[in-house]
Image (cartoon, rainbow, N blue to C red):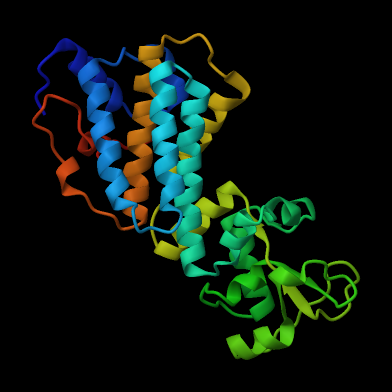
Length: 286
């Protein structure tokens, strides 16, 4: 890729670096108008890719808000959008492989209710481990086995019937015997209630479902989280903010496009003197 200006060369060099965002945040070059326009074009192309994807509207909205906040120099808000894109893309994979009841929990604003009750999955290994424990063997994650990642309860202690399934129904669907005890009183369980995956679990489970390496997504998510807290970064020049955000944004969409099996060959090269996503894809060690 041949840059036509010093500004382009500086941005391209920064985008191609292997370090995490925090390690080089003070070395970010200022974004130039052509680069900002290039990112805008990428977002428009991404909108088409996500048009018919579950939760695609949420992802596109986050791209738009991230771009606008980056232009204004609001790094925290812009990076929060990048983090949200990762979460929504991984939730898309998870929901598509399991049950739309998770979407229902979002729409009805009940997700946090189950989280507050302690019905959570902290890591991929915790979720898959629960399935194996209750099934006594490895089972495929689907709309029924996902309940095994949740909490078992007896009739007395089950609280959220809307998002629970009777053990006998689950045994019939999975064609197996399930030996589970109530999480509260240890009597034989009558129900399993869905559990809510935390962000790290969601990323891991998305990789598990797709059979793909999500290490870069994990590292990028962690880097972004550290920008939001504890650092904040309120005093960075707004043109530098755009470059910092764009670097993470390009990494995020490259990874989620791969995760969701989305392809856009038009972004593999550029003839307008701008850095390309191909340079991001070739970068390792984030």
